[in-house]
Image (cartoon, rainbow, N blue to C red; front, side, top):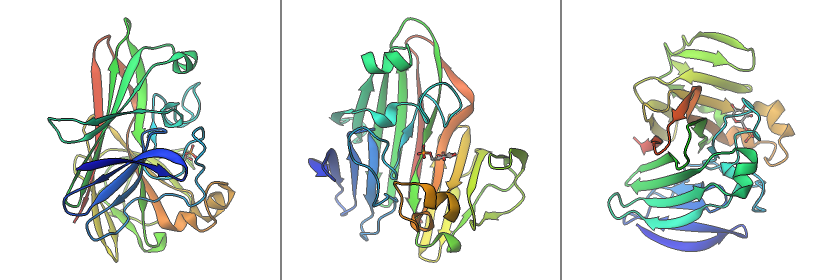
Length: 278
Ligand SMILES: O=P(O)(O)OC[C@H]1O[C@@H](O)[C@H](O)[C@@H](O)[C@@H]1O
């Protein structure tokens, strides 16, 4: 994997290219993946053309990191603060061959969250495959707890022709209706706003479109899978997304939400998600 420093819509980013011509781009702001193209030049992630690149705001699209809080479940800013801060490029890990970015606690983070930590995002790419792994290390003296999500925006040709397989039988919390039930359908279809947190099944999910299928796997440490599409009505209200943006994305997120991770001093936790073109 070759890495070069680039500017992406005016902001510092890194571009990695693989031997087979596949490539990804990741912004230092938020350590946010922005693009992943496979050897066939097909873009696999959705990045909103209206995403704000000002080095402050959360970027709409790619793979935002939500940590140490998920959504508005706590006192921190929505989805925590890691997606709003600049991360450091730590280069390629000699053992894994993955690109590593790092964020450590600072005065700014301690004002929001009084804990010493080191977060690392590792990104690995192989033919038709992309793996993102988030590690959180407790570098302080006392324990802390946190939630996390790799909030992946998958690019889809047309949401009306997408099905997501693999969630049948999983416990679901439909956050729009505040309703808990077991998912009965073998394949989810999306024709309106959809926002649900599922107990993650052991087997990978499959995102099926007329143009092909993507397998989505996650670590057992990520006990939930979040599925989100804003639909036309909410989509039109999101200032950083075009009106038809919702048609071209589906978020499938590897998450740890319901039971927060309790991390002792010196301990670390890792959660990952892997995308594979079938
Ligand atoms: O607009 P944000 O802060 O990036 O959040 C987007 C969405 O993220 C999803 O993970 C949540 O389930 C949704 O409820 C939320 O709206």
